Length: 241
Image (tube, rainbow, N blue to C red; front, side):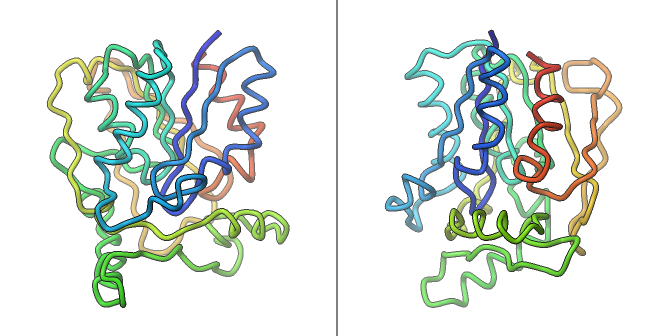
């Protein structure tokens, strides 16, 4: 039995994994999909002080409080930063890092460094009434849709779980200064359909930080593949268990 911890991206909640968790469980594995501070069942904790460090701490606390080991840690989108920061704190508990259509940072980088277009979101938040709240991205015409989701029922379900994102999440830098973190194997899963204009993906280096060849898989769907292709995503994740 493997243990998967699935970490949602910006604006989302742990509910976005509801189609994947049962599939992992039916294959005999343990899966947790928490909501990060300010989202889902923790939406009441949203505030300007919530940042990347807060979210990394959420994942570290979940793993340590439940004494989880050999964790396959999956981060979607913004959560590529979250799983990197969490792994840097507890590398001995992480068996694999999965960057799911995710930001992949180097030490000291923020979301703006990895995906410069996010600076525009921070600027808009600074000019708003609160100065720190970033509302979810708007729905776009197909094939982009709402985070790549175009089915009307799925769009309505997804929209109901979205909440504002604090700007600090995109501003705080990732720390990858623990040498043990670099030994953790990595897998990258890219969603290759309906990529919005302005979104650029860094090429994955041919060699992982641990010296092994890079592993990159693709799914022919939009960004929120856990909603649009849960079975296909689960099939890939099970290869790591």
